[in-house]
Length: 192
Image (tube, rainbow, N blue to C red; front, side, top):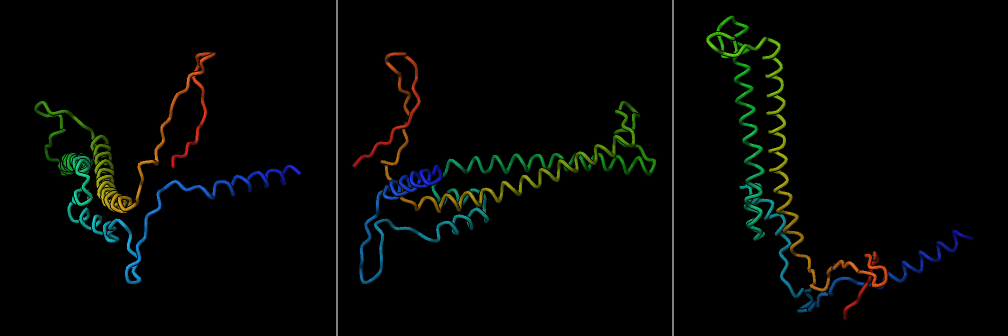
């Protein structure tokens, strides 16, 4: 019996909510059997933005007229590229020192003439660490590159969606005049 009441209740709620709309309907004009919407939508905008971003990072954001995102793109790519170059330089430094140590030649970590001394194991661990950090930096750089392409494409796609000004969410804190405490709740308001 409980299942039947629950089913009826949820069916009633479903039927009630299916008749509600949250966006303004666009007027479709019919000219010579070709359907034209009020606003011009470029269906190739997402692919164009993605192509531009693939050619030059940030160009897709400029195509979408989201100029404030260009410094964010270059900061992300520049930072990860900096760490890649720095880790690669340190990896090569420790690798060269290890190779010189193995051949019995002096190197910058041999402890002679004021140089710090690193053992063979320390040089191997340093090489391993900086190689892993270098590879991770390369992976992060590639991820940021792909992410900025996807972001430009999604932004171009979403800019074609009509959003009306009456689609707003304005949370308010209501104070109970008797207890002088905040009350939680939800209010649904329709504006016609």
